Amino acid sequence: MTETVSVRLVGGSDGERATFEVSDEENRCLLTCRYRDKTISSEAADFFDALVSIRRQLQHDGLIPYCYGASLNVFPSTMARDMGRGLKAYKLAPGKHSNRADLVGIFDEGTDVVPADVDAQEQFFRDWIESPRS
Image 1 (tube, helix red, strand yellow):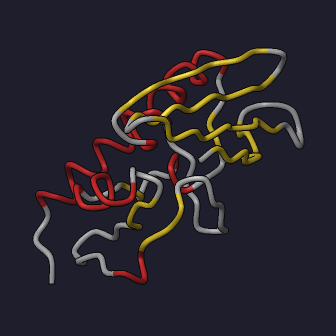
Image 2 (cartoon, rainbow, N blue to C red; image 1 turned 180 degrees about the vertical axis):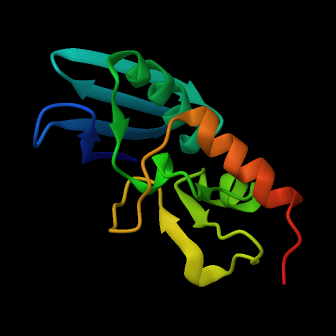
């Protein structure tokens, strides 16, 4: 499977976008990002991990993809990674359990996306794991 998606970039010029080529090859997830005449590729066990790797490189240019996979309050479960190759993740709210309605595509965007760097997103997830939930 190969799919190409276009994602807005936060921190760049107005309307700046990147294209992501999503390729699932022999149980490996290959993600290629093209922006500003540059190409970044990452191969990982799942697409969320591949996106994290690319986001770390985009951060050097002050850029964050405007999508759920780069949103502060979104993170995949182990099952989403294993069963769905990390293409879906859960919107998280402090003090609340996630459910199916909270599942979003990592390359999708919405008005509730909170662009964040990788470290902030990972810290939010760790804090969510440790917080009591109702």
